[in-house]
Image (cartoon, rainbow, N blue to C red; front, side, top):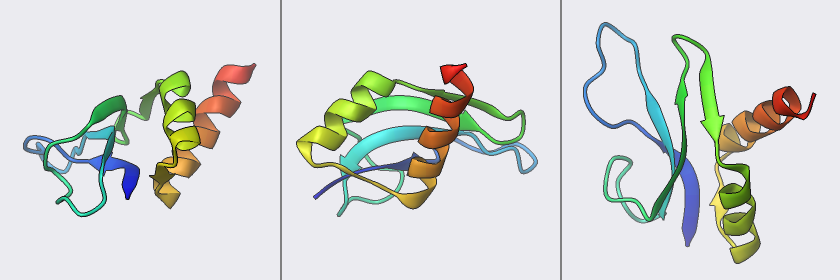
Length: 82
């Protein structure tokens, strides 16, 4: 099964975590090799970027987004729709 989920690459500096939104095999570890990177999320500075076309195409192919990624995607669409 393919999932769209957050991965935490690199080292965090004083609790400032940065995440990539990536398409990856569900059986792989969180920070292992991914199929495609769809965006990034930095909660410390409230920065979010998602490739909506890529997200939609992977969901149509059967990829399952995690609850967190679904929430982030809805927020991103809502902010950028205006």
